[in-house]
Length: 242
Image (cartoon, rainbow, N blue to C red; front, side, top):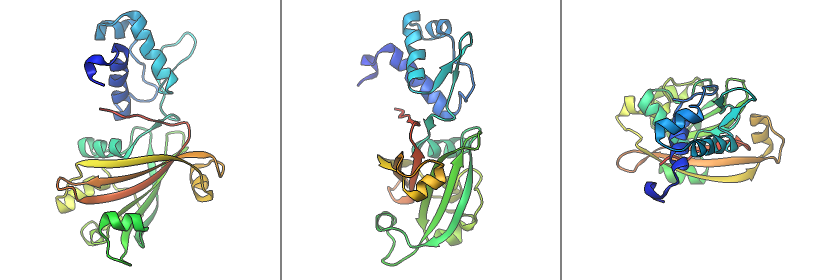
């Protein structure tokens, strides 16, 4: 759908969503009032009210009686691999305000076949594996993920083998050491039932619905830099930005 044909309220919703996903609008920030939205975007107050209702319906805003409408993301927003890559490369920060990751494993391991194919790993060859659990400011887990890299990066980016967070994220560390810049990500998602291991990491019950995603970071030549797999609990919105 072209921008010209997109209803005005959805154009404003898309703008505010982009600000929320990027962290420009943070959890607890006050959204522009209906009157301010109407004036800023030259829309009617009825259309501006629709903007607020849409964001509330998608779990990205909340309003208490007698209070302004505020951003609400701690329990509802799922940041994608593309979001994190953009943040790492543009701001040097891979996590939003209030989020933090605990690295739960780092080392060489045998990758699953689909990962080996994407990395171009030789048969029976190992790859570099990093696993983490990301938490929000309430210390609740919002995702668990595993990233895979070519084993030769163990020598050029030794920080990947350390069970500690890399400031600025892995894409920035790899670029600094090798000159290879991740410029795009391909991502696929599906709904699934939580395995026992996933349930333990996320603090949910085994069998509860979760969102699984697989992503590939590629450089300007289209070569794979990183392959990842993540799982997030249900009830978190994945926001796509054009």
